[in-house]
Image: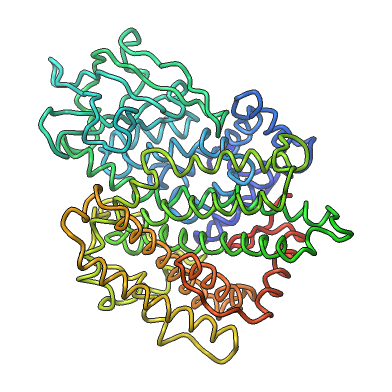
Length: 587
């Protein structure tokens, strides 16, 4: 058993299946992190806000995660860690993000993002060395960025030049790297040829312990508006030698390697961020119940009540898409590229908009940086960071756009729907098939789920009829998207496409979210969760997504709003998460 894997005195959970392991792990992490509203807790919101004001990552938070050996969750089980499923990793990390985005990103997610490159294409020896670093408590950084070129990787200038002994000489700078100063190793996207095109770059796994300390330096730390405690800096190399076996995968395959790694990280990271949005909704519900306005509680004001229910729906919609994308890594690896990009594009965008809506209900207290509601302003500053970086919104849309015409021609209205297991929250999955991830696909089983649902959805109750009616409109939207995609000019099938083409990618992402929610409800109808089995939440999610597409669906039955409001209050009172999992929380 890994050191620190269970609280002191607690029995080890029997590892009978994957769900047993992850449920125990989530409960363990909640217990270790404790009630975040208890100011005596060293990892409380109050203490996390103090660390943020000081511009540091929480020392107490890092100690707790060290003791819990969180790094093991980023290491595949075959290498001695706990990583076996992407969706369960998301559930574990959500417990960290609900307290502090800085802690989630600054402690571990960067190591996960770096590590995926090595797990995907590294040699057996590289994977063993990386596992040893992480399991010993070390950190690993990934360096894609150069500020002059942003997401345009093939224009990067950082070089891994041929060295005199068959190795490489690292030369140039990388900027905005999380934990560059604290990392035991760096995964560096590097130019290995001056020839134009995507085959000019490779990936290098450089371990700090083996480098000539006089030939490189860590650049000064950046001041950040969000995630102020994260150690964002850069690296400068001056012909720093690394051995030939530092190359990850084949020479010239850097772009392909990065795009495969993105399929996993883009699928996973947005779902982790739901934890911060969950806390924000919980914070505003507390305010609305306790604050009086016009001789009523804020919760009695129809607009406030609708806003809170809408935020809950956004979390359910985002979690549905996150679930489908993360499970697709295992079940539909040849289709994952487009699902991952859609998730990384849409989920942070929706969560940011949700936070804005919640801030209106919170009013002037939105600006307060301390006290009971102080955590809200931290989360609203930190969450947009997830839309930036090497997998920013535009980059994700640019991944989708070249695939639209192919999907319109080969898949939409012709393919088979996704397997039910794609939408089952707790069902076991096969190992992560790193080697089967492909850069593009001509199939889209998730959209086929939407099309098939029009024939399969029941219509016996008003809520079910509302679901069916909106699903039919969504199918019409997919048909229009297909027609528009088939007529795209060649120049609109690239990252330099027109704004109208980027809007097509946006519409497509919303349709994937709708299909995911439908799939989740179809599988939950016969399950034990009475709320997820109820069509009310699905009707409301689809209604909200339809309005996002510019549609004007009919008003929902009054019972839907009442059911949603009742569930928001129930989960708040019983300290349960606002996502699909309805997880018990420490506070």
